[in-house]
Each structure stands twice: as structure tokens, then as C-alpha cells.
Length: 496
Length: 95
View 1 (cartoon, rainbow over the protein chains, first blue to last red):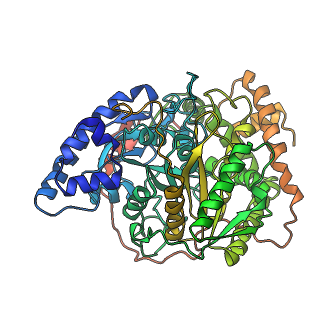
View 2: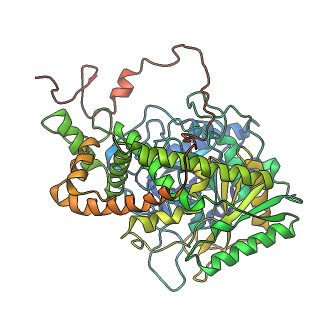
View 3: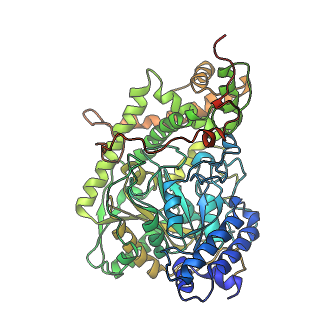
């Protein structure tokens, strides 16, 4: 097969092709290594690992030839550069982790390699996953492979898993891992026209994932189709004794759940998600999504999630408090950057001033403030109480409905530099995604249509804790109904 | 809540981030703006509502108290900006 034809296959199709020996893992991986090089202008990868990938592909070919194939054998994927990979540079998009080569492998990536997946490289992200546009990375912004027709301005891929989303959309990876603290898998998936799933909190281990906000960080899969994401999730999920918040729950066969049958499924439509200033076309797409599910036999139910408007401010207090605590470890002593000073104290302060970018500093300062003596109750405890109410909203809704349908983000991708004048304008991007992080429930973004200026828009399905199967089943029905077949203006191997 | 320059400088000291004098004014504006915005939480009645620290089950799992890993000194020191004779090296702390 030619390279463009190989690159056009999705993960499930590539898996079939390998099993039927239509091509080898080495051929597939070589095509992807070339694709990674070709999309270099997008800045989606911080560290490509082409030789490592070929060695993994050869091992997979050996198993395939012996009839000992593993579930993901020979499938080349990208890894967000926030997962620690043994002896391979891991940056979290930050200057402060300069030269850091972890002596260990994260649980999630270890599971992926144990099921035969091939690592193409480490993808760019907002610094420490703090951002919604992938513009805060020390390694520079990622460009979205999509452009508005007739307009050459580069657009953001969303964030923080922007490199993973851009790589998958541009056919420079079959799929990718991401992490989602307030929308960082789902919003870039929406902006780049791919599928992204934030699983239930505790479903995928956080061990070896560079921490931003521990009670909100969720590793998860990103791919071209719902099926691809279901396949990847099964390999990534599972109990891990090394993460005390990891759930000791059995991992179902998510792919088997995609039976297309959503008859009688009750789908909640929350009134509070009609926010001011949301474009009509997103509202229209949302209505279209409701219709698709109704036509497949689901029953739409109007519901109320009254605390929705307080999710974002509660999130920013909790996330920033946890971040200020987690990021205290970057002190120039054990790894990464050190800026010398005359005293230990001065070394800490100079290292952290030089090593953290503007957005990270802003967040660490606010987090420090809300945890400081005299303000802890007013800000941090208050936000945690509001979090209880937000989780209560979902618990009550899920007594009446099986899942919830909303838009993923209030806009399509915007230009690099837009919205950077005001941090709050940027934070508002996460208005529909943040509530699921606070409640810990699973949510997926599925590409559902194009905006008036030709950019992808996603719809989000949220479900009960540990019920990713329902979320994925409904998402696949919507995917089938929406028939989203558009490609970005820039794909590796050209648009075929 | 407005944060003045002195407050920002104090927070920066707590956070161990050195700020230049010229950074204090813009940061005090930005941080005050963000804090004003989060204060909308005060509209929510939360008396009697318990705080939620995590979506995970609160009870921690027990495990055997056993050594399962270790003996990796050199691998760990391999990332240190400075290591001397098997130790992390830092500027002198005690005179």
C-alpha cells in the first residue's frame, strides 16, 4: 500500500490490515515516521522517536508472524509529553524540566507497550497542561491542521492536549494519549475534528503522569473514531496499586459495547448550557445531535444542572490550589533546570522564576494565595463545597437520564494570539467541559459538523461514573448519524 | 478582592518565585481580576454542605507493608543538576 493509503486507515482498520498481513508493522510505522517529519510545521511533536518506533514495530512483526499478536500490536500512536517515558525526554512543555529523562515508565504508557502499541514520539502541550490553546508551551505553539477556507492565519488546536489532537487530525499518529483536567482532551478534540474521551476519575492510572491538579487530572484516549478510542481505552484502563485513587474496577470490552442500540436510552438536555454569546450554529448543531439520537430510538429529556455557572470559578480555585502544591517539587535540586544562587532560597526562587512561563506563574501564585493562612476557608473550602453541589447536580440528573448531550466548547478553533489578552476569556473555553472533571464522570467529544467558516465542532456526551460503555455507545450512534468525513487542509500524505 | 503590590510580592515569596519589581503591577492587576471573577462563588449558599476533595472513593486501600522497589540511587541521581558522591548537591545551608 502507498503511504497516503496507509495513513488514511484508522486504528481499527490498521489493526485488521496487520492481522491479515496486508502490510507489516514496519511498513506502517515507517509511513508514520515520514508523516511525523512531514507535519513538522505544525509543531505537534516535541520529541519524535522514529528509531524507537521501528524497533517496537519489528518486535510486533515478530509476534504477528508467530501468531502471538497482542491487542494493539504494531499500531503507531503518539504520547502527550506529560506521560513519563523511561529514558526518553519528558518535558510537560516546561523549561523547568529541561533534560529530564525519567528512570521509570508511566503505568498507562507501560500498559500500551505491553499490548503491542508503537510509540511515534512525545507530543506538544500547554506548559504543565495549563491552557486551552496550546500557546503556553516552552516549545512554542502548536498549529491546528485546519484553516478557515481562504484565510491563512494559523489557528490554535485547543489545549492542553493540542499536539496529540493535531497529530491525530493530520494523520501523523493513528491515535494518541492525552490528559484532561478541565477539558484538555475534549476541547482540542472538538477543535481538530477528532474523538477524545475523558474517562471516569480512577479509571486510568495517574502514576507517572506529571501532576497538574491531582483530584481533577484524567489520562484518556484520543483517536479518529469512537471505535478507535474504545480500543485504546481498554488498553489504558485498569487498577494500579501505585495510584491510590485508581479504582479497583474490572475493565469491560468497550469495543463490544458499540452495538448501535440506544433504543429507550434517556438523554438529558441541560437548560443551563445555553450560555450567553454562544453562536447560533453551535446551538443548531446541538439540536441536530438531539435529533440524531431521537431518530435512533433515544428519548431526550430536559434536565437542569443549576450549579453549572459556578463550575468554572470553583474549578479555577481547586485546580490552582492543587497546582501550587504539586509544582512545589520543581526546585532545581533533583531534576531539570537549576539557576544558581548564593543561597538555597535564592536558587529556588531564581530557578522557578526562569523555569515557569507566565501562565504557570500566574496559576501557582493564585493557588498559593487561596491556600494561604486567612484565605483557605474563604476560597479553597468554599470551592470544595460548591464542588459537592456540582457533583450533586449530576447525581440527581443521572437518576432520571442515562447520559447527557451538550456542545463540547462554546466556539470553534480561534486564531493564535486571539483571547490571550484576558485570562478569563481563555478560561471560558472550558465552560462545558469543566463540570465533568469536578464530578469525575466520563465524557467524550465527537466531531459532529462544521462551523460556518469551515471548522470542526464537537458534541459532548457525559455519563455515569464507570459507565464509559453507554457514553461510547451513544457517541458511536451520533458519529454514524453525523457522517463527519471532512479532513483538515493539511494532512500527511496529502488529501486523498 | 484587590491584591496590591505588597501582597503579590508576599505571595511570590511564599511560592518561591522571584519577581522583578516591574512585574508586580501587571500581576497585581491580573490576579485581582481573576480573584474578582471567582468571588461569584459567594452567591452560592453552602452552609452545611461538606467539602469534596476528590471524586475517588475516600477510603484508601490497605496493602502489605513491604519493600517493593529501591536500590536505584544512580538512576535517580542521573537527573540531578548536581550530584556529589551519591548525594544531591545544593548551595550551603548551614554556615
